[in-house]
Amino acid sequence: MVRDPVTNATGDIPGCTTPRLTLAVGSAASEARVQYGILSGDVANVTLVRTPTDVRRRALAEGLAAPQFSPKRVGGIRLAKDQKEQKEIYTGTPIDLRSVVYIVDLSSCNASDPGWRPGVTKEAIQNYVLFNNSSPVSNALDRFYTTCSYNKTFFKPSNVTVVGPVSLPCSGWIPRNTTAGAATVERTNATVQDWWDFSAFCGASEQAAWQRGTEAWATNASNSDPKLAALTRTAVDRRRNIYILPTNVKCPWEGYGDVTCTKPICDTFIRSSSAVSSSFGAAAFLHEQMHNYGLEHSGRGADPYGDDADVMGNFLPAGNALMCHNAPSMWRVGWATPIVDPRNSSPLFGNLTSANFSMSSNVLTLTVPSAHVSDANMVVVNLGAADNSKFSSGIPGVDTYYISYRVKAATAGAFDGGLPSKYNRTMFIHRYNGVQDERVFGARPTQLYTSSMSGTKIWYSTSASNFTIAADGTGGGLRVTLVNANSTHATVQICKMFSIQEICGASKSDDGVDHDCDGLPDCSDPDCLPCF
Image 1 (cartoon, rainbow, N blue to C red):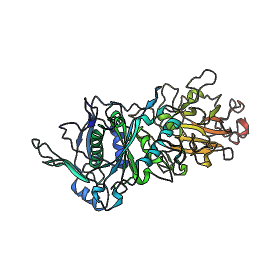
Image 2: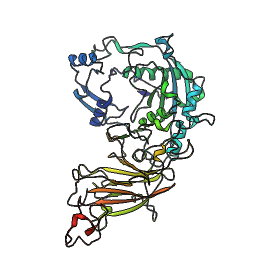
Image 3: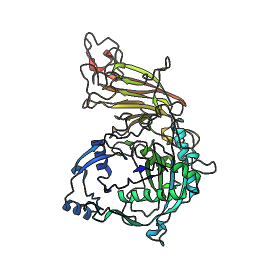
Image 4: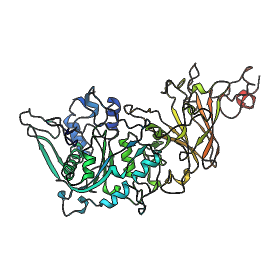
């Protein structure tokens, strides 16, 4: 994809004969992305090895996706030297997003079946992307960005337009340059460069056809629509295209978005039945758009969508109300940071490593503001690091933990108005081993523990089976205790475990230190009986 130097409109690279192929889907696609460090929109040289025909036939017979080239058989992906960055981590300058929302009409597939018609109106979609006081949708996309980002990202009405319906042909093909040699890959042969059929498929070719067709429509419509012209013909780092698809499209998902993106247009596809929902409002928009931002799903236990306090997890309990992100997701995109030192505003105050603890002083008590009060609202603990100069865990098995506190707002459209009531005034602990880098993939936040003042209030990170501590004192275990909580902040005690049992002996049994963080120091701990 390139941008026209005169109109700034985007389109296919002239003369490009590279076929569109689906190399991987689902978890296999995630594995390939991690292995090769590639973002949507990157230019790369790819060596492919064809999947054996018998393997493809067997997969198709079993009703499974059967790419012609399996990621396990990709010979190699080498990024071009001019690879681009996503550059959407907040670094001090607010980000103004631009978006064109296309309502797609595919009644050409079957004019008598309403499932191929749009099923939504521009007015309805407008209420989901731009907040309207008369609309029941309290989690509209613009409100989400402004509120949950603490005014770091904006989705302004002047930069957003909803257009359509855009009628597209149900199927079609792109002729191949006949002077080139014949090809036998997936949808390419001696005369055809690519083809698509919306009535039967939902692959890379169909997605490209939706974008190509709507952009061509926009090029013509821009002649009489100044706002659309300004959005499509102005060169910006990235434009967010959102495609509202008819219910009948043959896609295995309700929504689909580029996970990070370096190309001129970042795409989000949403089935119309999920785009307009009385059950969860604009949550489908929020979820897929934050994939564009680079966020992964937020899980709990074995469920990759299990975190029901994050729009990247199970957002259904929030309904139409506004629910923001968990601490690691907020940190990943630069919207929130660890707490700062109240004495000198040091940003490292809430960024804890092994350097913050010693054998003689292994307990810290910190005040953590609720996420709705401040964007400096978490404590990050990485005991695998010796200090903040090497933030990544240096000891296998030592995770990085994010401790945060959230309060449910009384108003549906306020920060965390959609937080489930069970999480009101709750401390959260997440595991997240990612970094603020769009080209470091694979890390997903996982909710490990929640506690209110009526709960257990104490969480341990380790057990005898996974306790690891190095000779230099890095590693160890963690005990987190919720000491107190109110409508604006929580008091949290953090204890580093230097041992899974109290360290006893003549020099240790009376030093007043609780080395195993069980609340029983020295001789009060049964581990040390009889005392020396």
